[in-house]
Structure formats: structure tokens, C-alpha cells
Image 1 (cartoon, helix red, strand yellow):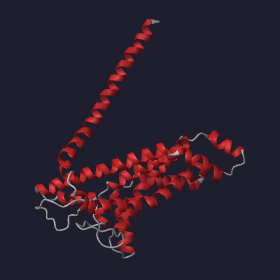
Image 2 (cartoon, rainbow, N blue to C red; image 1 turned 90 degrees about the vertical axis):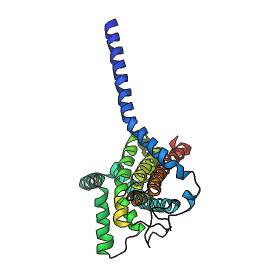
Image 3 (cartoon, rainbow, N blue to C red; image 1 turned 180 degrees about the vertical axis):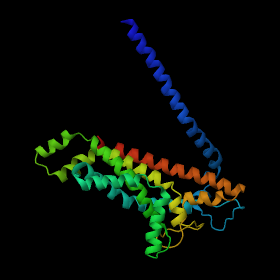
Image 4 (cartoon, rainbow, N blue to C red; image 1 turned 30 degrees about the vertical axis):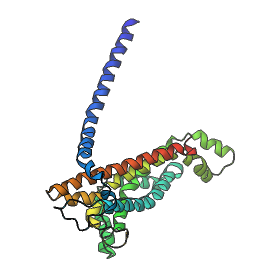
Length: 286
């Protein structure tokens, strides 16, 4: 009896060592990237001007200015994207899990899979062809949000779909046994049970689209001024601010690149923390 037990202990130790080794190998690049961005971009973030001023009148050779215009642009475009994408994605996931049967459901699932693999530049060019070429409208912030919608929908659909599948069927059956209609069972039982997971999926989708550059380059030219109108004029965003200053090999511009990258990381991190707090404080997650 001692030999099998000893053999299992050795295998367990080897597996543990391999797991921690793989974990350390995977986390080293992440820590390296974070340390580089924080060490090179934190200086500007400590100044109040960075959070309240734009880059209007600031040349690439001049020190100063802030990222307020880019932060506002990023948040507005992401907010509009979420307002459009989240209802579509959640209702699509509900249909696929609760109602989807037959050929139409397979077609919907297949189209979601296609959207999942579409590069951001393809989504941007599609919206450009419809918005600018076909409809003859200007490149504005709202067109960027439309391109981001195409990128966010499949992420939210798949994550919501998995969360709904994790809800035990016993809860549904108990509700049906009490005579509760299916639509009310979904809204009162299924969705609240999966609420925290759905929020996590929405945040994952937002985290993806907030860092996209291709739709901004194609549909939302960079502006150094503050613009809160999504339907008029050019609008800045953190990715395009990074791309704009990156092209100039000058110290003031490079410093702003690192600071803008760190700002984008902080925004995504704040969204994730907020989502976890909402899920934890929500009554339906208990």
C-alpha cells in the first residue's frame, strides 16, 4: 500500500512544480509590461493637468497638456457601444439558450462565431462602407461606436450564453411547476442567478473594444481638442492619442504615449473592479 501512495505523492509534487513554473513563465511578461508602463507613464499622471486639460495648442516638442479630451472620447464611444451592443447580445444569448431550436438558431450561432473571428479592421471597413460610402455621412465618433458594437457583441453573447447554461435546470423546473410563465422565469430566476457572470462578460467586451485602434484610425480621426458631440467633428481617444504621439521620436511626445497607455490600463481596471463590486453587492448574486 505504501508504493502507490508514494507514487501519487511524487506525481502530485511534479504536477505542482510544473503548474507553478508555467504560471511564473506566463506572468513574467505581464509584470514586465506593467512595470515598464507604470515606470515610464506615471510621472504625467501625478499632475492634475493631465486629467483636466487637452492637447490643444501643444506641439510634439512642447511639454504639457493632458489627456482629458482622449479620456472623454474613449468613455463616450465605449458607453454608446455598450448601450447598443449589450441588449442585442444578452437577448441573443437568451434566445440561443432558452428558445433556440432548429435551423434559425444554428444560423444565429454560426453568425456569432463569424463575428468572433472578424478582425477589427474588417469591422471598421464595413462600417466605413455603409456609413461613409453608402450613406455619405462624415467620419464621427458615433461611427466608431458602431464598429465597436460588431466587436463587442460576440464576446458578450458567448459569455452570457455560458452563464445561462450554468443555471441549474431544477430552478427552471421548479418555477414552471408553480405555474410561472417561461418569460417570467427567465427574467425573475435565470437572469438574476447569472447576473454576476453576465456583468463580467460585459466588462470583458468593454475591455476589448476600449483598446481597439483600427476603428478609430478609419472612422474617427484624432483631434487635440475636447469634443463631446458624437455626431459632429473629430473626436480623440486614448488609442489614437497613443498612435499620434508615437510617430514623433521626441521626448515630450513619447512621455505622453506611456502616460496615455497607463491611463487606458487604469480605466479598464476601474471598470473591472466596479463590475466585481456590483456583482458582489447585488442581491441576485446570492
